Image: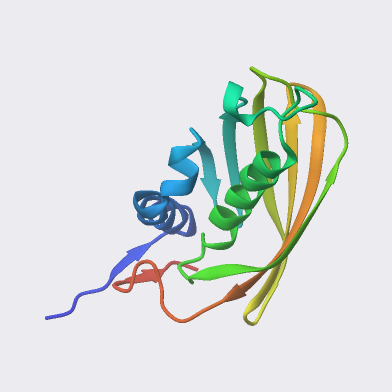
Length: 151
């Protein structure tokens, strides 16, 4: 017998994040931490480690982009629909420095049909390091096939 559980949107977001995190070797491998998850929102953090600084002795932009992209991924996968990035771009505002705790806060701007738009702000303390915008696309499947979402 197939019984479906009914969860709140917040519980669905957490369960989807837990399922994703189990398989996210990239984020875990870089020492990222999932700080917060809600429907359409995610906050992730990462400490800039010695292997992440470039020849300018600042955090390589690829690591900052990856942190923002991971927060975006958790935000757009919080509705029990598997979603991938269709596009992402970033504007670097200030450098991240060795030892900085970078925090990426993602929020849903628009979600319609299979497409979504998400903004991610990366900060170090009060300083804004970068602004990222990602476009998502829902693909086949769900994270939690045996649940219904409460309205």
